[in-house]
Length: 229
Figure 1 (cartoon, one colour):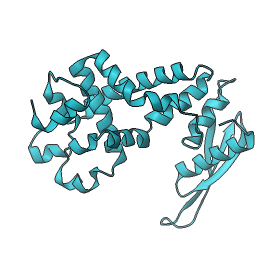
Figure 2 (cartoon, rainbow, N blue to C red; figure 1 turned 45 degrees about the horizontal axis):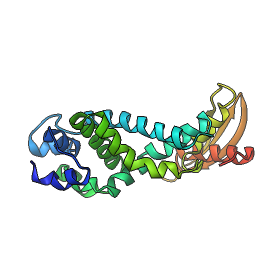
Figure 3 (cartoon, helix red, strand yellow; figure 1 turned 60 degrees about the vertical axis):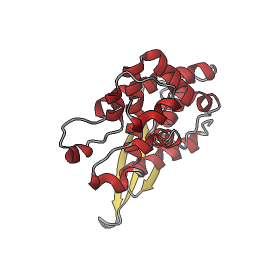
């Protein structure tokens, strides 16, 4: 048994069958250059783990929030599977301690939210392949259950998703965004965006990036609608 993962196996009550899967789960592609390998990293496991996490979190949202309609269930689920949330679970579980990256990436690894999110998902993918669905389900459910059970929809986390779900509750139309104006120099640019529904402007916002401006426009629309949180 690989000594580097003994503590990990004990933490999750795992008796590994294929330890190579766990090594892959914590290996970033930048490590291949140092090790002289190709495609020996977590990317495929990440793909698999993402689906397993989505399934379990969806089920928990459904079970613990029986009065919540589909749109809000989708928003609630997104609060747990977004990058910042999964990166925090990675740190909370200590999975970040096992990450292997190339020398050029080492300084940024512990602060890179996308990398931490990927490792969390890849670890779940490794458990799924190594231990099977039942054990993987038990582990993932234990990680999320109390948090999902006690959670409330927070539209401030992802205003664009929340607005989209709310507007589609009764109609199948999508909201659309348009950049109305760009101000300032290339080093200090400010974007103005508007959000539309059925051809009518319902909110407007500004920000230092197009995404930030659209997010502010969605927040503006939600505030004008007085939507429940």
